[in-house]
Image (cartoon, rainbow, N blue to C red; front, side):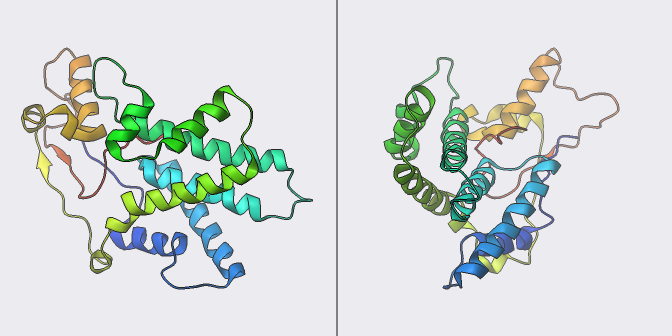
Length: 229
């Protein structure tokens, strides 16, 4: 059985997490940091369960960097704060754009960024941090804020409040269904399933102890490859 398992129990749990990360109404600064810290701890636990979407993973790392930056300067060195920002931004850009590499020949990051509407400044900053000098803290802070805004617009904003108490609907698809779809529309999981069949000798058959009952397709954005899983 090929199944997509989400690390959260239901859609309501994901909406609750979103409210902690992106408040709809003004919050006290201390309360805001406390709720975001709780959200980061929850995502950290989800990470251990696997199948954490790239957008959630990147939101976690970027928020962790912001929270680290809010700690008193005498407790956290500037280098550590910069390192947290650079790690979060680099993983955000690399994981997002690498997941879009669905052609035989690798396309440049700038071309892929343009295709999905990601500002080129993120690619510039990632290249600067990787191949040049460490960017300034001012530029890193600005990039982190813009990255979180981009993730909100591209991923988090799409979830509807009225679905908070409903479990995601699932659709069972066979390998024949997957094979009929363009690779660009399959997303990460579909390509992984077909790739696994190829590695098994292109038999199209699952292991004998796993009956052919399809896999679950969750409504929502599942195109991005999870980082580190």
